[in-house]
Image 1 (spheres, protein in one colour):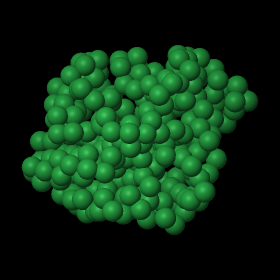
Image 2: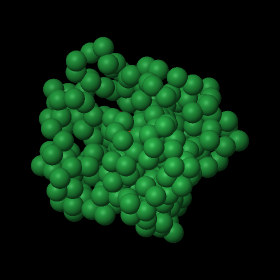
Image 3: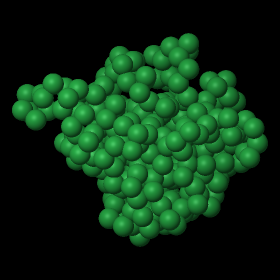
Image 4: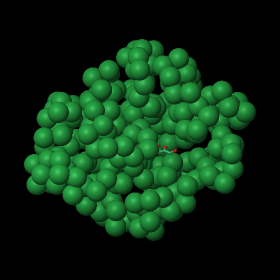
Length: 267
Ligand code: 5RP
């Protein structure tokens, strides 16, 4: 692997642990002002010390993230649709590689929509992006299985993640499912999981623990952190699972300690 590619990847997957805590705040690119991200700059400020990298769009990056911040950036470079449309798969590339380089990003991220009407369009765009990534030494992260209509089972996720890796993804983001070990085993690139819709903190910690236990290198998590009542504590607990080998039960105890028993009493 070329030095630049390797160096950028090291900002995403920590070499010492081989693990990754990516904080995802790119939801606005099709959802608009997502709950918890109305003021994304304010939301992320206290979370950044605990994230290995930050996934977002160039608009949010340029407008609200301090350029003196040294957090590695995973730049979403696809878009073109919104929640007002039934079919979210009609995406295209939205950012040039020159702009990604100007922003000094550590990786570029694009969704692929395997099995959708726009499968070919998104897979071709993704392959072209991987070509650009190779040319300039920028890793590409594939985002798989976004959208309501996708069956998020091991068969589908195994197919989507494998295709992403075959086309050149350096890292593949997907969702946890039953039989997740098979998904990871069939994907030659490192796999991270998205958290998905907000669920109770205890369940989100279990999700992170189960994913890492099944072979994921970590998380690219958003709503289960920034929509939590305890976002700063939550990211620390997720981090303790990913990097420090804590179980979900230990991380839950940690969350209770950090929040002064507020979690268990539900206050
Ligand atoms: C949306 C994305 C998000 O980054 C991804 O879904 C991760 O966030 P969450 O943990 O909230 O699901 O790629 O297209």
